[in-house]
Structure formats: C-alpha cells, structure tokens
Length: 327
Image 1 (cartoon, one colour):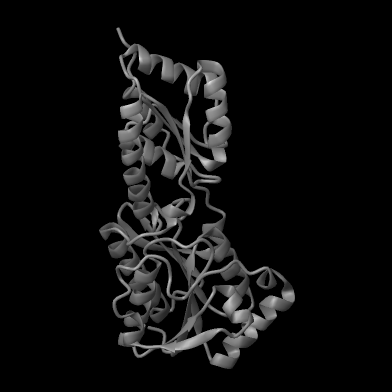
Image 2: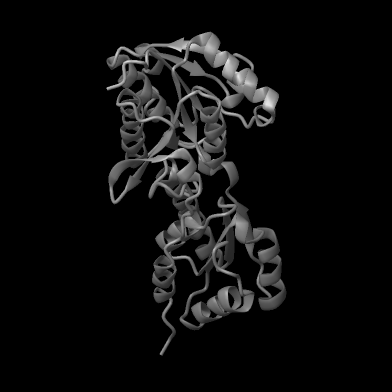
C-alpha cells in the first residue's frame, strides 16, 4: 500500500457525459475514507493551467449522484496542448502539493493524462464518454444514459411519423464510432442504421430497406445515422430525390449528453471512482480503470491509448435479421 498519496486532484475533461458527477462523488468519498485530501480542478486540464481549483469535502458532493453534467465543469484546453501550458499545469500541481490526479473523460483526456504522467505527476483515468469508444474498456460512463435519451426521443418521433405515414431521419452522436447509433437502432426497430465502421451503400442500406419495408406493408420508416457516417440532412434530401418522399430530419445533438444518469451509469461510475482511488492507494499509477467481462481492470495509459475498440458487427447482423424479406 502506498503511503505517498496524501492529496489528489480530480477533474473532468472533454465532452461531458451523464454519470461524471457520480464518478467525482465516488473519488472524493473514497479518498476521504483513506485519509487523502481532494482538490477539485475546474474546467479540466485548463484548470491546472490557470489554477482554477477548490478544496473538496464530503458535503461538496452531496446530492450530485443524480445530476447530469459535471459540477467541476469541463473544457478542451488549447493551452494545455503546448509545452508551456503543460509546464504551468505541473507547476500548479507542485504548488498544491498534489501527489496524483484522477482524470475523468475520453481519449483526449487520457492523452493529456499521458503527458502529465511523463512530466512526473501520477494520473489515473476513468473513461466517461457517450461514444463508448475507449479501447481498454468494454463500457464507458454515459453511454447507457445517452442511449436511453435517444430512444425516448425516437419513440416520440415514431408516434408522429406513424400518424402521418412519413420517413424520419435521425442523427445521433458518434463521429468515429457507431456504438450509439447501432444500439439505439436495434432498440427502436429502425428501418436502417448507418455507422462509420461500415461503408455506406446508399441504394442497399437505405433505398432498398425502405422499399422492402413498404412491400411488407409499413407506411412509416426510421433511419438512424451516426454523425460520422453522413449528414442526416443530406440523407433526407437523397431519399426525397430517389423515392419522392418528404422525410423529416432530426439532429438530436447535445440533448444526448444531458439528463439524469441511469442506474447503470450511476453504479458503474461509482465503482470506477472507487477503483481509481484504490489503484493510487495500492501504488498502481498512470493507468486507466476499465471493464472487461464485467470486472474492473486497470491498463497502463500508454498501452490503453494504443488499443483499438472494434464494433461487434454481430449486432449489425441482428439488425439485418429483423428485416427479413417478404416471402
């Protein structure tokens, strides 16, 4: 057990994700239980560059378990990306007497953590991103809530699409990963789902899907597209040109980042926050907490950043099987 960890910083960085507050709460309360002081760093790595921090205690995290967003705020720091900015961040850590930093966020957050660790400040990362695209972890905080938010919105859209016998094109987040789009698409019974991991053949993946669905007697159609697979607006225009329909386009955008976290995200964030602090207590530094087969594991930051996460295309096969041709 490490006795060198007496005071730590905690920050949230990058895109916010529901459950970040639950992770912050777990870090603070676990650390205090281990006689470790906690300093809250506002606005991610930018907070270390500009000395934006405050002392945290148990009451600092009262009643935040159910809150979306992050009480520590978040930002992407261009200054931290410079050598001078990182030097200033390290100087802040030394001034505060921080023995380590717990960083909650996604890939960009962890790249910042790697730079910090190389400059001598130990870091432990907690994956929180609605894209669920961190290679060293099967699950990332915020994914379940974002899925449920998108599903609720699409279910409501379907009601009006069915009433007017229309086609709806819904764009969900996922610049480089289609986890959210595919999970949501299966859950809402989408006519078609477009994801960045699979090259889009518009005639095969959209036009023919709509035609087959119409032949089966359906009069309303739901197309779910990950933002990295194409523009929902452009897809809507092509559907109109090729099928003579008048699609309604909805871009869900940042609504997917908000809302009270689901039970899964609250529980997972709490477990990961606890595991991050205990990793520091046990002398396991410069790593990322993640899940493998339901268990919490740690992976060295550099190794974790070199891991790629591959979408389970079995899910796409399931989606296709739900649209068996009329025979």
